[in-house]
Image (cartoon, rainbow, N blue to C red; front, side):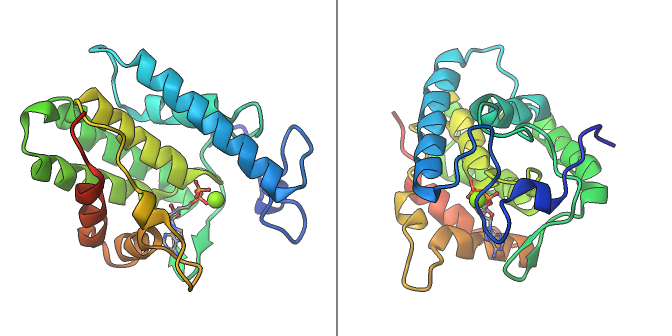
Length: 209
Ligand SMILES: Nc1ncnc2c1ncn2[C@@H]1O[C@H](COP(=O)(O)OP(=O)(O)O)[C@@H](O)[C@H]1O
Ligand SMILES: [Mg+2]
C-alpha cells in the first residue's frame, strides 16, 4: 500500500475537473497551457536522455509522470488508491493495480522492452505498441494525465527505434460528440479487450525518422 493516499476529492477542485495544483491555478486554460509546456519540455529532456542503457520498465514509466508534472501536482508519479472510471468504462480496480502493472511490465521486459523493433516491419511494431498501450489504457494507474504519459512512454520507445513520436493529431481531434477516435479506441480496449482500433491509429501515425 502506498504511504500517500488521495481521495478523488483531494485531486479535483470542488464541482470541477480542474486538479488542485501547487501553483493554486483555478483557470483551466492557464493550467492546460502549463501542462502542455511541461510535457513539451519533458519530451525534449527524455528524448535527449535515451541511450542503449534505457530500460522502458515500470520505474521509468512512473518517472515520466513524476518528473513531468511534479512541479504542479503532489500525486505526480504515484499510482491511485481509489477506483476510477470514465463514461461507462471502469479502469483496473485500485486493489489489483500494482499486481496488474507488474504483470504488464514483466511481459514487456520479456520482449526486451521492444528495443529490437528497429529491425521489425512497422506493422509488427505497431501491433506490439497497441498491445501494451491497450493494457496501460485499461490500467489507468495515475489519478490524471494517463493519456499523455502513456502516449509519451510509447513515443520514447518509438524514438529509441528510429521513429518519430507517433502522430496522434487526427485521432485526438475532438469531434461533434465531444469524443475523439482515440477515446473510441480506448473504450474498445477497456470494455472489450480489443485493441484493433488503437492499432490502426498507431500504425497510421508511426513514421520512420
Ligand atoms: N470513456 C472512456 N473509456 C475508456 N477509456 C477512456 C475513456 N475516456 C478516456 N479514456 C482513456 O483515458 C485517457 C485519459 O485519461 P487522463 O488521466 O484524463 O489523461 P489525460 O489528462 O492525459 O488525457 C484517454 O487518453 C483514454 O485513453
Ligand atoms: Mg485528463
